[in-house]
Image (cartoon, rainbow, N blue to C red; front, side, top):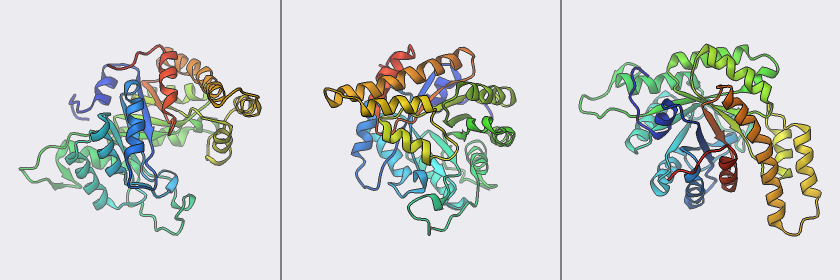
Length: 320
C-alpha cells in the first residue's frame, strides 16, 4: 500500500496492533444465503471480519461475490471476499474486483484455488491466467493507480477502496520452507497487506515459519486453526487434506469422546469443545507472547459455537 489509507475495520485493527480474530463462512450449493447470515450473526461479537469462500475444495457453491455482499449487508459483519484465479481470466478478475468495490466490500483474499480435479467437477476447464501473486498485484494497481494492466479508469470513476490479503502455508517448515517463503516475499513485493495461513497444529513448526515471514516481510499474519466438531471431521481432515496432519494424541482424544458414554448430545459436544479450547489456546497465547502473530483465522465452518469460549480463553472481550 502506498500510504496509510485504511478502508476496513480489519486493516484498522491490524495497523493498531490489536490481536485480530477472523472467521470463515462457507455458502453451499444453494440460492439461500440465510444459513450463512445466521452463522455470521452468531460470530459477529467475536471477530473483526469473516471470509466468504470461493468454491472451496474446487466444489461448486453459491458465488462468493454474491455471498460476500449479501452476508455483509444482512448481518452487518465485515466480510473478506475470497477470489480465486482458478476459474477466471484477468478480464473476469478485474471485473470481479470492480464489482466488489461497487458493492461496498473492503477486503479481498487473493487465492490461486484448489485444483479443479480435486473437486466435484473434475471435467471443468481450469483457467489460471493469473496466480494469486499476480492477482494481488492487479488489485493494488487498481486501488493505487486507478488502472487495470495500464488501462486507466474513467476520470469520473470513484476510487476503489479495498485491501488485499494472501494465503500462506506454515506446514512447509516440516519439509523445507524456502520456496514458500520466496512465494510470500513475491506477494509482499506485489503489495499484499495481510496473510491468513493454512491450518497448523505444531507450535514449533508455526513459530519457525512465522519468524521467517516476520524477518523477511513484516506482513501481519493471522494463523489458521481448525476447531473440529467431532471425531469424524478430525479423521477426515487428517486423511484427506493435503499437507495437514492432525496430531495423533489429539485425534486419540477425539476418538475417546466419540466412544464415550455420554448422558446426552450436549455433554458430548461440550467435551469436543473443551478439547479444542485446551489444544489451541496455549498455542495461540505463546505465539502471541513471542510477537509472531497479528491474530488468528478460525476456520470453524458451521461451528460458530466455538467462538465465545475460545475468545474468552484467549483473554479477549466480545465486541460491543
